[in-house]
Image (cartoon, rainbow, N blue to C red; front, side, top):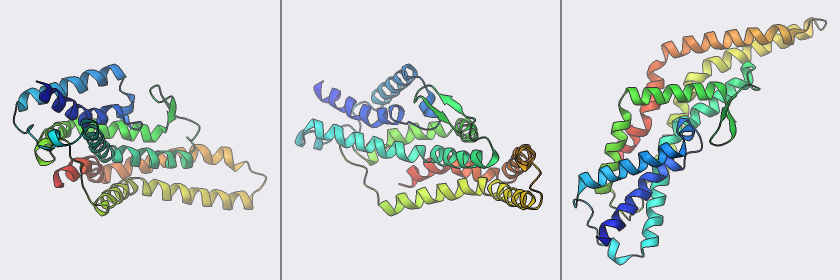
Length: 247
């Protein structure tokens, strides 16, 4: 019985970090009570479904238990990092567009982290989360966590090349940049034109004229971009699951 309790808490550390640690993205807005319930239900369900299969590991008898818990915590950190990359990319690029479009002062208050999130970044993050659930990718993540105990036995660190990580990060950033690049470029052109007009007609208060125009142009270009590049948005949402399956 003591052995199974040890295995249970090892798996709890691996899965729990994914729900408890995220400080960015939609996951950070989930109340702690809900996270606690989800983690416990998921871990208990997986543990009962697996039974005694895949839990026998000689390393549990030869290494200090605290060290094994630390290894599982590191593994959970790696999983968390992989799953939160799309949210970080969308929040970063969304804040960049917010500053350009004139919505930098606006934002959405995050009651969990007591910070203010980017307006467009939060909008895209929630859209990505909705698409994540609509595509059934949450089921794939749960299946990956279950299978991870067979591919990566409890008590062992997730060993992956940093080059593979860098390739994943760069690919995710490029996919996100492709979504926001048209609107960033369009707003930059508007800023250049407004600067030329301001120099040629200094008596005109160009700021109050150009600000509503930038917001209008920004949202129009953003809508056109999402209509034509929806497949790239889906690829960005699928990228964490695709990366984990590939590993």
